[in-house]
Image 1 (cartoon, rainbow over the protein chains, first blue to last red):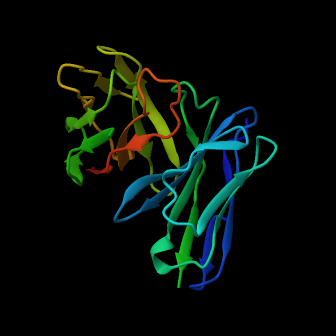
Image 2 (spheres, one colour; image 1 turned 135 degrees about the vertical axis):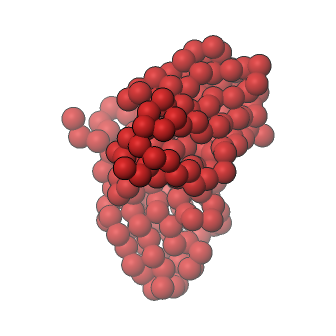
Length: 115
Length: 116
């Protein structure tokens, strides 16, 4: 079946612009996660959705970052007024549920470059 | 808080060599433990897991044993291949024994390069 998909695969933007990153989880997966992968910081958790609510937003680095999930499916991560330090690969993952340690399935990521 | 520590990398081996990548963790209780692998140009994928103490996870010739006495989950393979070249991440979920697993906490990743 279809895995987790993310779009765009690459995004180059100018400093100060807003960007939206999209994640389509595996159908039927109630839990969705956003992570960020960068050279200096490794893999960092950003936010976790169970259904449409976000019980854990502790990893969002600043109020320029926000995310939403609608219909228990698609999620968008929005970065406002992008900065160069936002350059990274943004990974989305989904799992059957966030309340048990089910395997998380990862998408291919969106590589964001802020110039 | 929960944390995962992996051995410093990168690791460079010749084909058929023995591989060990160390992973130790700090967590409350006895969490499940995972190894994820990221092949060049691809997304993260689960390599193996163990859900309780003394469990051994195995896949594609890789093994890891959950040792609660040493809070470790070292990854091993007896004979590596060029195709094993990838980045390997040890990971654990939070709040072991709690009701919310949510995010995974990852180690810093170990880059493995295998030469023919």
